[in-house]
Image (tube, rainbow over all chains, first blue to last red):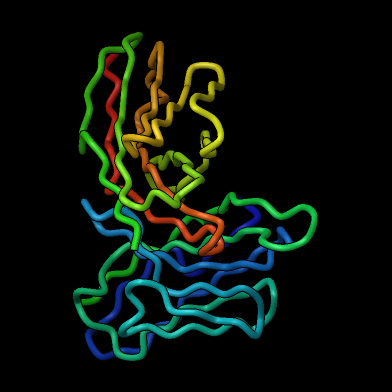
Length: 116
Length: 113
Protein backbone atom coordinates (compact mmCIF):
# COMPACT_ATOMS: atom_id res chain seq x y z
CA UNK A 1 0.00 0.00 0.00
CA UNK A 2 1.65 3.26 -1.18
CA UNK A 3 0.13 5.11 1.77
CA UNK A 4 2.40 3.14 4.09
CA UNK A 5 6.11 3.64 3.46
CA UNK A 6 9.13 2.03 5.05
CA UNK A 7 12.76 3.10 5.06
CA UNK A 8 15.22 1.73 4.32
CA UNK A 9 14.02 -0.99 1.96
CA UNK A 10 17.22 -2.97 2.37
CA UNK A 11 19.87 -2.85 5.07
CA UNK A 12 22.98 -4.89 5.75
CA UNK A 13 24.63 -4.40 9.12
CA UNK A 14 27.02 -6.09 11.49
CA UNK A 15 26.44 -7.84 14.80
CA UNK A 16 26.24 -5.38 17.69
CA UNK A 17 25.21 -2.35 15.63
CA UNK A 18 22.16 -0.27 16.47
CA UNK A 19 19.59 -0.16 13.68
CA UNK A 20 16.41 1.85 13.23
CA UNK A 21 13.67 1.00 10.77
CA UNK A 22 11.12 3.68 10.04
CA UNK A 23 7.48 3.58 9.02
CA UNK A 24 5.31 6.46 7.89
CA UNK A 25 1.66 6.49 6.89
CA UNK A 26 -0.65 9.00 5.25
CA UNK A 27 -3.83 7.01 5.90
CA UNK A 28 -4.63 8.81 9.15
CA UNK A 29 -4.86 5.50 10.99
CA UNK A 30 -4.42 5.30 14.75
CA UNK A 31 -3.15 1.73 15.05
CA UNK A 32 0.34 0.83 13.86
CA UNK A 33 2.11 -2.51 13.97
CA UNK A 34 5.55 -4.02 13.41
CA UNK A 35 5.84 -7.60 12.13
CA UNK A 36 8.71 -9.86 11.34
CA UNK A 37 8.53 -12.42 8.50
CA UNK A 38 10.71 -15.52 8.41
CA UNK A 39 10.46 -18.33 5.84
CA UNK A 40 8.00 -20.98 6.99
CA UNK A 41 6.84 -18.95 9.99
CA UNK A 42 4.49 -16.40 8.51
CA UNK A 43 4.34 -12.96 10.09
CA UNK A 44 4.84 -12.52 13.80
CA UNK A 45 3.89 -9.42 15.77
CA UNK A 46 6.77 -7.55 17.43
CA UNK A 47 5.07 -4.40 18.80
CA UNK A 48 1.86 -2.53 18.25
CA UNK A 49 0.60 0.93 19.11
CA UNK A 50 -2.99 2.08 19.63
CA UNK A 51 -1.93 5.70 19.49
CA UNK A 52 1.05 7.92 20.33
CA UNK A 53 0.83 7.23 24.06
CA UNK A 54 -0.10 3.55 23.97
CA UNK A 55 2.53 1.01 22.94
CA UNK A 56 2.31 -2.71 23.58
CA UNK A 57 4.55 -5.74 23.20
CA UNK A 58 3.68 -8.43 20.72
CA UNK A 59 4.67 -12.08 20.77
CA UNK A 60 8.37 -11.58 19.94
CA UNK A 61 9.43 -8.22 21.40
CA UNK A 62 12.73 -9.32 23.01
CA UNK A 63 15.68 -7.52 21.42
CA UNK A 64 13.49 -4.81 19.89
CA UNK A 65 12.16 -1.42 20.96
CA UNK A 66 9.80 1.04 19.29
CA UNK A 67 8.95 4.71 19.26
CA UNK A 68 5.73 6.36 18.11
CA UNK A 69 6.94 9.84 17.29
CA UNK A 70 3.63 11.00 15.89
CA UNK A 71 0.39 9.42 14.79
CA UNK A 72 1.90 8.94 11.34
CA UNK A 73 5.33 7.59 12.37
CA UNK A 74 6.33 4.38 14.10
CA UNK A 75 9.97 3.31 14.34
CA UNK A 76 11.48 -0.06 15.23
CA UNK A 77 14.94 -0.24 16.78
CA UNK A 78 17.36 -3.08 17.25
CA UNK A 79 19.67 -1.85 20.02
CA UNK A 80 22.35 -4.46 19.35
CA UNK A 81 21.63 -6.44 16.22
CA UNK A 82 22.30 -10.19 16.13
CA UNK A 83 22.31 -12.57 13.13
CA UNK A 84 19.01 -14.27 14.05
CA UNK A 85 17.29 -10.91 13.59
CA UNK A 86 17.94 -11.26 9.87
CA UNK A 87 14.43 -11.16 8.39
CA UNK A 88 11.84 -9.16 6.47
CA UNK A 89 10.19 -6.48 8.60
CA UNK A 90 6.76 -5.08 7.84
CA UNK A 91 4.87 -2.15 9.21
CA UNK A 92 1.07 -2.12 9.12
CA UNK A 93 -1.69 0.31 10.00
CA UNK A 94 -5.37 0.10 10.88
CA UNK A 95 -8.16 2.53 11.66
CA UNK A 96 -9.22 1.15 15.02
CA UNK A 97 -11.45 3.86 16.40
CA UNK A 98 -14.23 6.14 15.28
CA UNK A 99 -17.20 5.48 13.04
CA UNK A 100 -14.91 4.48 10.16
CA UNK A 101 -13.01 1.88 12.18
CA UNK A 102 -12.26 -1.37 10.39
CA UNK A 103 -10.59 -4.67 11.13
CA UNK A 104 -8.35 -4.49 8.05
CA UNK A 105 -4.62 -3.94 8.36
CA UNK A 106 -2.67 -2.31 5.53
CA UNK A 107 0.96 -3.25 5.05
CA UNK A 108 4.01 -1.35 3.90
CA UNK A 109 6.46 -2.74 1.32
CA UNK A 110 8.86 -4.14 3.92
CA UNK A 111 12.49 -3.80 4.91
CA UNK A 112 14.93 -6.61 4.26
CA UNK A 113 17.44 -6.63 7.11
CA UNK A 114 20.60 -8.73 7.07
CA UNK A 115 22.77 -8.94 10.18
CA UNK A 116 26.24 -10.33 9.53
CA UNK B 1 -2.99 -17.48 22.23
CA UNK B 2 -4.37 -18.18 18.79
CA UNK B 3 -2.61 -20.78 16.66
CA UNK B 4 -3.23 -20.82 12.90
CA UNK B 5 -2.06 -23.71 10.74
CA UNK B 6 -1.98 -23.42 6.95
CA UNK B 7 -1.67 -26.13 4.30
CA UNK B 8 -0.14 -26.82 1.90
CA UNK B 9 3.10 -24.88 2.16
CA UNK B 10 3.58 -25.01 -1.62
CA UNK B 11 1.06 -25.50 -4.41
CA UNK B 12 1.69 -25.82 -8.14
CA UNK B 13 -1.28 -25.69 -10.49
CA UNK B 14 -1.81 -25.62 -14.22
CA UNK B 15 -3.14 -22.36 -15.58
CA UNK B 16 -6.91 -22.51 -15.66
CA UNK B 17 -7.17 -25.04 -12.84
CA UNK B 18 -8.38 -24.29 -9.33
CA UNK B 19 -6.28 -23.81 -6.20
CA UNK B 20 -7.39 -24.44 -2.64
CA UNK B 21 -5.57 -23.41 0.53
CA UNK B 22 -6.79 -24.55 3.94
CA UNK B 23 -6.31 -23.07 7.41
CA UNK B 24 -7.33 -24.16 10.87
CA UNK B 25 -7.46 -22.02 14.00
CA UNK B 26 -7.50 -22.88 17.68
CA UNK B 27 -9.42 -20.10 19.44
CA UNK B 28 -13.17 -20.41 19.03
CA UNK B 29 -13.50 -16.71 19.91
CA UNK B 30 -11.80 -15.68 16.65
CA UNK B 31 -14.32 -13.95 14.42
CA UNK B 32 -12.41 -12.24 11.60
CA UNK B 33 -10.42 -14.14 8.97
CA UNK B 34 -8.53 -12.19 6.29
CA UNK B 35 -6.48 -13.58 3.44
CA UNK B 36 -3.41 -11.74 2.20
CA UNK B 37 -1.48 -12.10 -1.06
CA UNK B 38 2.21 -11.23 -1.10
CA UNK B 39 3.95 -10.75 -4.41
CA UNK B 40 7.72 -10.83 -4.69
CA UNK B 41 9.31 -7.76 -3.12
CA UNK B 42 6.03 -6.37 -1.83
CA UNK B 43 4.07 -6.28 1.38
CA UNK B 44 0.99 -8.44 2.00
CA UNK B 45 -2.20 -7.15 0.38
CA UNK B 46 -5.68 -8.05 1.57
CA UNK B 47 -7.56 -9.98 -1.11
CA UNK B 48 -10.64 -11.19 0.74
CA UNK B 49 -11.89 -11.58 4.28
CA UNK B 50 -14.76 -13.28 6.07
CA UNK B 51 -16.44 -12.76 9.40
CA UNK B 52 -17.87 -15.43 11.64
CA UNK B 53 -21.48 -14.57 10.87
CA UNK B 54 -20.98 -15.63 7.24
CA UNK B 55 -20.23 -19.08 5.85
CA UNK B 56 -19.00 -18.13 2.40
CA UNK B 57 -17.90 -15.04 0.50
CA UNK B 58 -16.99 -14.65 -3.13
CA UNK B 59 -15.23 -11.96 -5.15
CA UNK B 60 -14.85 -12.78 -8.84
CA UNK B 61 -12.42 -15.72 -9.06
CA UNK B 62 -11.68 -15.98 -5.36
CA UNK B 63 -13.88 -17.30 -2.59
CA UNK B 64 -13.49 -18.08 1.07
CA UNK B 65 -15.44 -20.56 3.15
CA UNK B 66 -15.65 -20.76 6.93
CA UNK B 67 -16.65 -23.70 9.12
CA UNK B 68 -16.90 -22.38 12.68
CA UNK B 69 -17.73 -25.77 14.18
CA UNK B 70 -14.60 -27.36 12.76
CA UNK B 71 -12.61 -24.15 13.14
CA UNK B 72 -11.29 -24.10 9.61
CA UNK B 73 -11.49 -21.79 6.64
CA UNK B 74 -10.34 -22.11 3.05
CA UNK B 75 -9.38 -19.95 0.10
CA UNK B 76 -10.50 -21.04 -3.36
CA UNK B 77 -9.06 -19.56 -6.55
CA UNK B 78 -10.75 -20.62 -9.78
CA UNK B 79 -9.46 -20.31 -13.34
CA UNK B 80 -5.97 -19.57 -12.11
CA UNK B 81 -3.79 -17.18 -14.09
CA UNK B 82 -0.03 -16.51 -14.00
CA UNK B 83 -0.60 -13.35 -11.98
CA UNK B 84 -2.06 -15.50 -9.19
CA UNK B 85 1.47 -16.78 -8.49
CA UNK B 86 2.38 -15.42 -5.05
CA UNK B 87 2.56 -16.30 -1.37
CA UNK B 88 -0.83 -16.41 0.35
CA UNK B 89 -1.33 -16.00 4.09
CA UNK B 90 -4.40 -16.72 6.13
CA UNK B 91 -4.94 -15.04 9.49
CA UNK B 92 -7.36 -15.05 12.39
CA UNK B 93 -8.29 -12.36 14.88
CA UNK B 94 -11.00 -11.29 17.27
CA UNK B 95 -12.55 -8.08 18.45
CA UNK B 96 -11.68 -8.77 22.09
CA UNK B 97 -7.95 -8.36 21.38
CA UNK B 98 -8.45 -5.42 19.06
CA UNK B 99 -8.14 -7.59 15.96
CA UNK B 100 -4.46 -8.47 16.42
CA UNK B 101 -3.69 -10.88 13.60
CA UNK B 102 -2.31 -14.39 14.04
CA UNK B 103 -0.93 -15.59 10.70
CA UNK B 104 -0.52 -18.96 9.11
CA UNK B 105 2.91 -19.89 7.75
CA UNK B 106 1.98 -19.10 4.16
CA UNK B 107 1.43 -21.00 0.92
CA UNK B 108 3.58 -20.41 -2.16
CA UNK B 109 1.35 -20.78 -5.21
CA UNK B 110 2.90 -21.28 -8.63
CA UNK B 111 0.68 -21.21 -11.71
CA UNK B 112 2.24 -23.10 -14.61
CA UNK B 113 1.54 -21.75 -18.09
